[in-house]
Amino acid sequence: MPQLINIALSQYGVTEIVGKEHNPIVLNYFKEIGHTWVTTDETAWCSAFINWVALKAKVERSNKLTARSWLQVGTEIKEPKLNDVVVFWRSKKSSWKGHVGLFISYSEDKKYIYVLGGNQSNQVNIKKYPVYRLLGFRRLSATNS
Image 1: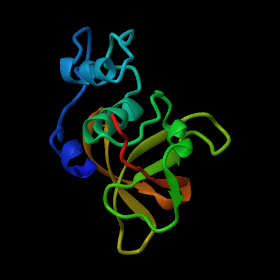
Image 2: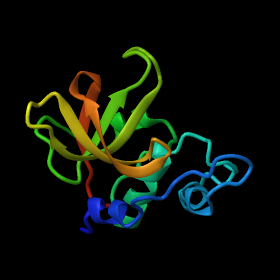
Image 3: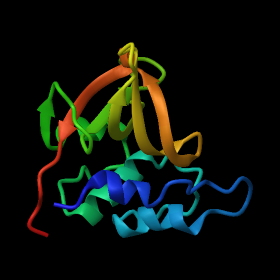
């Protein structure tokens, strides 16, 4: 099974374009996963990016644009490894809002999780998120398609 992390890293640095222009690479993530109605890179795209990476890796996908949809995909795990999906809450824990990316590692003090994902400060990069915002980790399995 191809490594999700390697596919995601191949996109490192892809960034939204501020203003009326839109990055065709970001729009292509939406197009390739079947959300062709999206015409702006200002549409939240963290889940679109992980769906695109999963499509390329031929593993399970949420097929949805909400980060929390990933809590229903794959197998729930407690001890994450490189390539596992990580889901966080945004705004407040009870909100529908969230963020999804790929687990890289914990910080030395275990207070942060380093995540490779899309739409992190409007680009594909590695960023740290506080552990207290964690909703869960998921391990994806290969699909037949």
